[in-house]
Length: 258
Image (cartoon, rainbow, N blue to C red; front, side, top):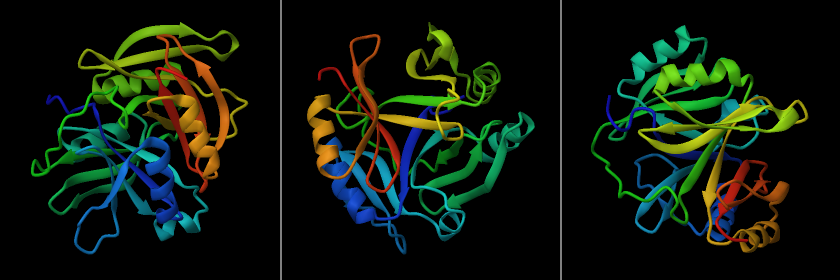
């Protein structure tokens, strides 16, 4: 398997107001927005320095008709999108958008795990290699978190799909265990069974690295973002906060200082 198999390789925000989202995230996270230059596509890139971090696009008409809320989507790299989609279906996941090519970019599929958390499978065509950026660098996505339908069955699913490994298991009292997982020897995220008090289906959440948490929260609030949980200190000394942006997309911030 390649190093990209099982790694989060891209992120995408689908929203109802791309111009407002550009201004919001550029200010809050410190990204720079640039047009992708893709022919016939209204697609914006969020960049941290020279590194491309994520994409931004208007929600598809079909999603709007289904009243789907704006949301962030994570793309997980695989060696073969078609084979991975078939494997996912055999393991109890669902393929919602069959594998297809993005000209001069790569191949992807939109899928859900057995309990309905959405993500994408992706393999690049090798023509758009991006500058490397440290996982903990400001502006990068530093953590990936699954609020799972059932941790006991979901972790084996992802382990079989992507080769993820169990790292530290953190007991959370009545909320159950928080399972940190790794890829290629590095911690990349955590997952736990979604608390019954959270009024949402299972979902993936992404933590954007910022220099100082309180200042980023102030920028978010000033532009119409809302804090839904936190801020709180987590093991390792980092501070995190869970938020929604002005259009309703869920996101998280993480920093080593308040």
